[in-house]
Amino acid sequence: MKLKHLIYALIIIVLGGFITYRIISNKSKNEDSKKFGDKDKPISVTGLVVKTSTFDNNLSLSGSIEANEQVEIHSEVSGIVEGIYFNEGTYVNKGQVLFKVNDIELKAQLRQAVTKEGLAAENERRAKLLLQKEAISQEEADVARADHASAQAQTQLIRAQIAKTSVKAPFSGKIGLRSISPGTYITPTVLVAKLVNTGKLKITFSIPEKYASQVKNGSTIDFNVSGSDKTYTAKIYAIEPEVAVTTRTLQIRAIADNTDGKLFPGTFADIKLPLNIIKDAIVVPSQAIVPVQSGKKVYIANNGQAKEVMVDATTRTDASILILSGLKAGDTLITSGVMSLKNEAPIKVKVQAQK
Image 1 (tube, rainbow, N blue to C red):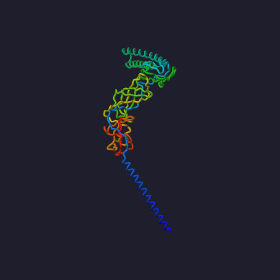
Image 2 (image 1 turned 90 degrees about the horizontal axis):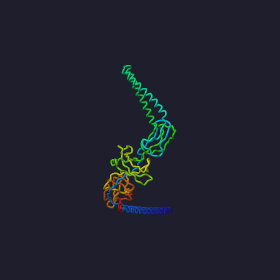
Image 3 (image 1 turned 60 degrees about the vertical axis):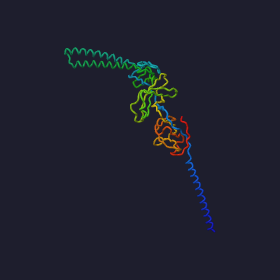
Image 4 (image 1 turned 60 degrees about the horizontal axis):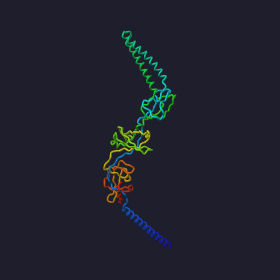
């Protein structure tokens, strides 16, 4: 009886296993069939027919605005400030006296030096007469001449020191906030104020080395500054003679008029640098480009399939990129779904007009 039950149980287990196997096998075949069907089903994408156009190659850069001339005003001598002859934040002219350091002691030293110089001159005159009469030696006459020359040099030195007590503007411009008052004891280390010439401003910026040959002195650039909708122009007047090794960039300087005084040194400038205009250029949407380890690639439509093409791409804007090689006019470029495409994948292209 027990053997009979055991046989029935084995038969049930075998039948259950067979049924389970068939179900799993059928399910697997259905999934494989679906996968095979999906593989053959074309992927819907959008594309455009590549055309050539004239490309105004403007390079977008950032630069800094600097004063055409800027200097920190210091006194060359130490002493008490006797007078200040400028108003903060005003325009001063070249050669204008800005402040005066007391020179009473120096003038006293000058009177003493002038007296010594006169005495030395008289001694030299007498020595010449005595030398003619052979009353003194040539050596004694030479000493008298040297004493006179030394006294003259001392007088000139003190006069130069006195001249330094009147500090003058080295060029015309706007002077900033002062840090001294009349009666202040000043030394050469004390910053009195800054003098800035803002009638013209320098714009300094750097470009990648690959564009170095396209930039020339006299070229015009456009730039904007934060807080203003106005577009300003500047002219390139100086180019660094070598590329910086660390950054592989070339530094350039342009100069702009600031007659309205609305540009300020120290601010940033958004620069548009015009490069060579390219005729028959191929410009494509940025979303069509797929970055890969070896460079950049795109997909084009080829007999109902996606064809992978490596391209050489350069200057780009927010929406487009310039293609130097890899594409030609008449190619149908795929512009959507490119990140999930594979080479020779079946596709159905909806062609859109190129903007």
